[in-house]
Length: 146
Image (cartoon, rainbow, N blue to C red; front, side):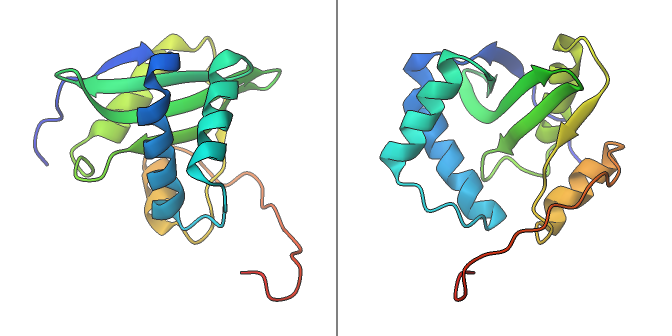
């Protein structure tokens, strides 16, 4: 594996909503999530996250966004809602470096996150960082839903 590029983590702002929304849309596609949200709905959700409750970080390499993360602190430590590396930048150590930068900012080593069971690449990535299976969430859907 080649040397990962130098990443800079900065807090995202309202000026980043368009970029974050597009990356969030790609995340939904790439992980095979069944979220039917429109771009407008994803943008509104990102604005809510930026305005409180969650922290949003944008990772840049030479001022170009290459990843983002969404997390919140709760009584049990950190809940990492999303960590996404842009297409074309994966498999270069960016995800690992991004997670390392995040951990330096957090005041806890207790981190939880959700991964869709069919997303084998994400499961392998998180397990390579030391995460272990913790819970399984089951869902009942209406007939015909995928």
